[in-house]
Length: 368
Image 1 (cartoon, helix red, strand yellow):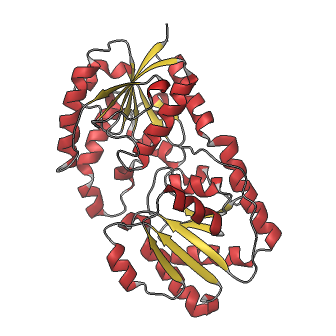
Image 2 (cartoon, one colour; image 1 turned 60 degrees about the horizontal axis):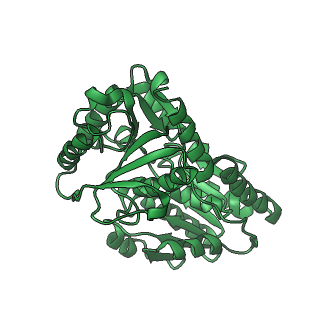
Image 3 (tube, helix red, strand yellow; image 1 turned 120 degrees about the horizontal axis):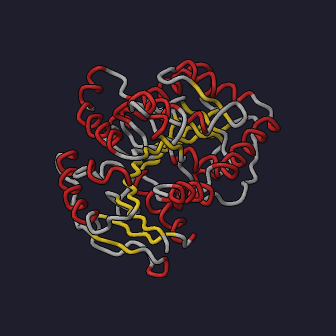
């Protein structure tokens, strides 16, 4: 008899947009195709999400996460609680704060994936105070759940620090992508194009990237570097007015097909984020064989090192500027080596095929 997996999430891509929602969609598809589990998915959408032929049972709880987020999470978890009681033998996989009510009753069969742990990476005292309620909710989950998923890197260190018996509870399961074939790239010595993809919010460090652009332009790189900045968000209008540089193109929102083209068309991916989990955009850029500049935060050190790019200090314009200049100065064969290593890393460690297999191994040994 197959084990039951009760997979509980606050949304599934494309019906809800976000890293965790995309993670739910891609992971569930791979788990279902393995055909070793009876999968029951609880989600807040009114419509059927997965094709019937995948064999996933969907329990729909039409629910809107508008208003005060934590209150909504608690209300949703009360509805989820009634469903959990109907599956007393199921392994429970909880995405984010989707499982709260009654957790001490059934925590011995709960695996929580908190993803980015952003509340534990706040930079200022003010931010730490604002995120205190979120940290308390997540620590409540950590206390009562049987396993906590880490995406790796610094996130594992945070969980070991925050959980009394963290080393026994924490399991590392990275984020992943579905890579296509290796991209054949041309490497130009005269001009390079740099790509950023992300939400226009404070934590993405776009202002620091723009400060680096300003300094590079003043030092003679204006006609050597083209920056393509993709995304929208609360700071979008402010930034397009404030950073009106001739070699910066604010692309705005780009759908998945457009993103694929942008990864292929640009030379170097730059992601100066201040705190993060394991960013999908970096994995997507790597799967398109792009060299990477990224800050050492969250689980980014699992993805990038000197073999495929530059892992730099956060909130450091000088370090960012140095990495861009260093890449520009590389010989074409050196750029090619970075490019191929990015792709190789993804194929070896970060495909959904491999990460789903790691999940299945966890479920096989869980509650044995």
